[in-house]
Image (tube, rainbow, N blue to C red; front, top):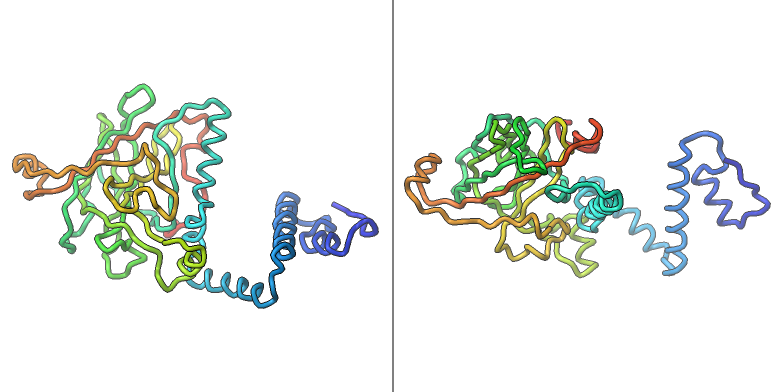
Length: 308
């Protein structure tokens, strides 16, 4: 792409060169995006008369954000990850496509390669004195038929809001499992009731949120990837009803259709059948998958993840 420098202002010339518009090399789409981003940044600096000190404070903030590996956390906290879901919902609605269980954000704490079990798994290692949880449900298609062979990939925090791998005090793949549904499309896991979490109080994400007058807390929730051949991959999570932050999730992940009601189970026979042998919390949630139009829709999006 070539631009006549004689017809440009000094700023336009600077932006054209810095974003590569005057070069025949590089990626044209990427150059156009960078030109827009740089233009918007320069206009913001001008509009708010940002000082040199403020500019370099922002640059150093980016360094800190990278050092703490919190960029994905900040993307969730600023609503950018939720905006991607909003865009996907808008595109489906505009195309008149069928919609099953709603999507919501993946978040930054997935770890690939969790142990795979058939129909049932125990997720906790018994090291925490948390409230036992029986989480179960069914994977169905739009007609209500069970989906056999679906992989329900589940992960959640412990009673302190920490996730295994990122929290070195937990065992490997603690509270992370994959369950393959049987002919009835059902899955079940025994685990412990998770706790919500807050951003690291000394981290750059919370530092920015504090400047915005916002908290960095999430309600108790459970993450899911649900996939099966012939169906669109589903990235979602459920929030547990009754949590103080249910409708005040700093990551904007709460959706009305994704709220699960915890039920206290005191029936001894049921507890024994589930091999829990004590009162526990039951959480039931079913998933509806949508037929895929192409195989690319059957896999999760590409992004940097642990163990991938």
